[in-house]
Image 1 (tube, chains in turn cyan, red):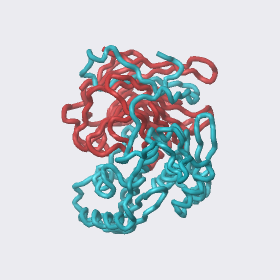
Image 2 (tube, chains in turn purple, blue):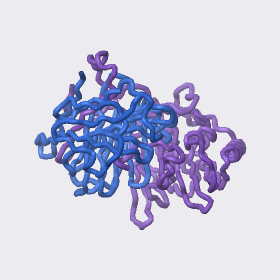
Image 3 (cartoon, chains in turn brown, blue):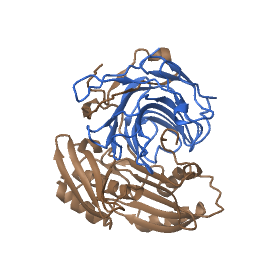
Image 4 (cartoon, one colour):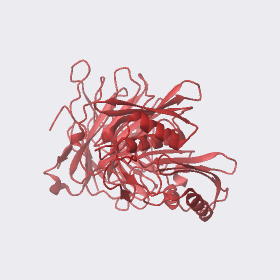
Length: 286
Length: 218
């Protein structure tokens, strides 16, 4: 076993048959002094990447109209135009030996779920337009950030998640009118008031929906149930942002998912994660 | 019995500087999460590493079960967590599916999750978290194709590393388990370190290495 590159390796265990009852084994070691980033070799990755959509593009080729991948500037312009989101100012890319570094400039950024979500949508669409022979989005994009002034006026940087997600996903988004009709139908079914609906078009469609939860609501569903009802278990959109409010307009929960990068964000008011079955890793003791 | 061995991480001074931790930390049911694991004795660490080997761990309906290593800043409330997760129900954080490795960051208010490649039973995966540089306030987590960073960690805050198991999504135990067991061994930092109390919920945790490794038996 290597002692210099502990990252992203998978090791077979000859002892495995003898410990079938063992759930997981973990050892922890922590350096007291400064640690720099360990080297990462993409070739070390094992297993399957994530595919959210039902379909993958065939052939596995760039989706630009002329059959070639776009360069960074061209793709950035295309995505910015397609999104037409007032918060997204520009996208920039920089080629490095490890892959593309992408920066999304926002008019404002407080590292909140909606801020990160819209930037994630932009990064995912950009990757799709720039892909050539890559299979997975983080084989193309090594890092991505969103930057913009925060509430205090100073710059805030959000580190965006670029996961092991297949490029070339085809979501088959229905028309805007169909998405809107489905949103209204689902809101009614769940006893929610549809307060706001926005449909974005990074490449296909993405849904941003705000719903009001009545004071006497009996919540016998989870946020994952609601998301699946809106866009399907295999989503038919590139991303969805769900914001739940109480009747006074106070936010209860925000859940944003960008399916081209695999990034998911979750915020909740105290106790609302349990109320809506929002699953997240916990900070110890929290 | 398999024993996970920690690895040497070299410091910027070229010295093999080590702290190896054996800590037990068990919380009550909080925010629908049952948690247990080992935390570092030191409160000024710059990273953590755990080798994770999943076997047949099964969440109940509506739950995710996850094992991870994490660095947590208990002063500014920041966290970066790398691990493996299985779910029966919704994905972790809305986007990290069952059976994939993941990295999740917490910025003091919101959680953000990103998935890596799938994991298989009986194989070992190296999960790490680390400070990006000597004066950096950003930590990065990595595991098998997933990488994510979180800023806002202090340079002199209370920062601990943990090897961690959780049940998330409901406040009930996985159906096959009836209770947690406490880690034992030398230099154990009991859950009371953070003032936690309450009934834990897990299988049997056994200390298998004086250097900090442990097994969770279902």
